[in-house]
Image 1 (cartoon, rainbow, N blue to C red):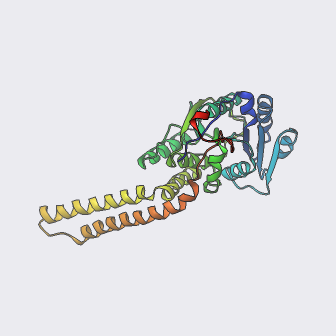
Image 2: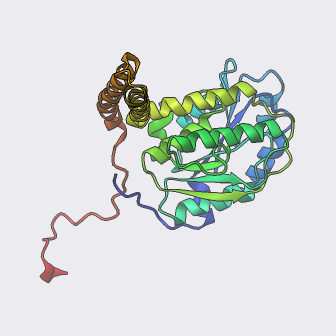
Length: 320
């Protein structure tokens, strides 16, 4: 993968390079304070609110801000779908995700955007320092991290924080792979980790949320399925090989126990388990080849040409 070239800029330059995508669904009570803070602190940034089929006055509140772009879905499609629409519309070098419920702080966004200009990274991901008020959601996030680590994913403490900043040329390639649900945050992080992009993590604090969270228990189960889906796309051998080795191990141990200890020969079940494991490993090899062919389209170089030689200037050391 080609190195990501960066330019050192100050806050004003960073302001002009930043697109802020805000998914909003029935956020009439929180969107005004959210936009007021962004417009005041980042007046030159491109701010895009994607109204995801709201049934309240969200769109009317957004239209009070003349410098904010409003994009509307005709009906509700989901948090991830709104983010994908916003990123498709965005035109700046950096794309930030920002919640509409006033939970994220503009100071944290500015600090993360500045890190994007000063560090050779593809993304800066927010890390919430304090767990949410819901014990159920905290336990759910714990099990998601545990499941991810069991599959050798570099699971950090907070994998689905909604505040994050990407390089547009990086995240735009993977927009079609992001789900339409709340798991877009988790999926985007796993994609960047599995593709080997450099990432920084930034500690953030949260404001008090305006309104109620729209995340449901079913979104947690969907997140587990999405982890498997992404791994099947990027590294299917990690799943198939483990399944194969487990089946082979069980078959061998069971066969030895029956054949030697019980003295009844190698049972058919043990042979079946071992053969199933071997087949699973071969399926993994086949899936891995298909995966590499599909992923070749995403491995485009990321670079900027910073200097071109003058056409009529000879490449001669004596002329330097």
